[in-house]
Amino acid sequence: MATKLRSLSRCKRIVIKIGSALLVDRMSGLKKAWLDAICDDIAALKASGTDVLVVSSGAIALGRTVLDLPKGALKLEESQAAAAVGQIALARHWSESLSRASIVAGQILLTLGDTEERRRYLNARATLQQLLKIGAVPIINENDTVATTEIRYGDNDRLAARVATMAGADLLILLSDIDGLYSAPPHLDPDARFLETIEDITPEIEAMAGGAASELSRGGMRTKIDAGKIATSAGCAMIIASGKTMNPLAAIQNGARHSWFSASRSPVTARKTWIAGQLQPAGELHVDSGAQGALKAGKSLLPAGMRSVAGQFHRGDTVSVIGVEGREIARGLAGYDAEEARRICGRKSNEIEAILGYAGRAAMIHRDDLVMTELGSRQDIVGGDLADKGPTNQAGPADNELAESDRKDAAHA
Image (cartoon, rainbow, N blue to C red; front, side, top):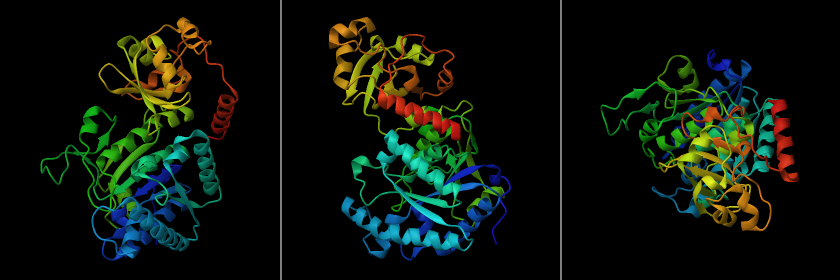
């Protein structure tokens, strides 16, 4: 019988991420009783009116068990083969377990590009929304059969965070083999302190992250903190909890220990959420103290405030803005290609035409295309109350198309 989950059911939409070690035993394969138990929890949430999405690891772990591959790290082609075999079995088991409560499962396999490229992101989100509309539970995983080392998430924690922002979830639950965040890895430090509530992800919180815990897992606490930064900045709270017990969602409801990451009180807009959540910025713009202060005040990044340019990127790509202390302070969409950016670096906006041979944009990153990622700065730009009143970008057809998509997104939010 499904457990009634009163507190979690207050959320309109929850994304649940499940680690490989919870679903798959290295020797015996799928842990069917555990899967059935969490599907009972999901059925209880669904019955209360909560939308549920699942980001499920386990395809490679299940496939390597079926193929009887040796212990230890797998070569890329071995991982892809294991995923090809395991994904079929994993989807079947999820479908069978959920069908006991007459719930339909829908499989979605995503690559990094599906959430990093704007149009593909919107298409993936539309698919998720339609599945939820018809009452299905999306079962999501990275498409490990085709993703290479260079174009993959490499862990499902950050993928789950991107899905949570994509779906507009209220809560992201990361079920793992550890019950939350500690001040140090508890298996190494017996004096490690458990952190029950994390209001802000500070550099000190980031420093507490450890490494991967088992051979079945590609992620550790580091990736969970990264996931928290993505989710909470979009207004989605996050829980890290142990999934080792049966009915782990019911256990959270009944008071099982877990770490709660509070959602930002000033979440960024949908488009800026996508920018902030980009996992692989194409380049870096290093800025001086004046520009850093201007960005925190909600202004655009002008070429005059840039000290150097790193990487190869094109106009419209996401780039990191690096402050005077060498840390990322913002991300945004580049207004110029990398080579043009290098030519106008440190120069005044009225010099751009003479340098490039055409009248370009005044800003390297316009305030509408920029989001602060440094702690405590994000709220400064939301709403544009302190925004730069200088020249605005002239939008082309592609820009107008994306703007229209965002307006439609907001209308349906």
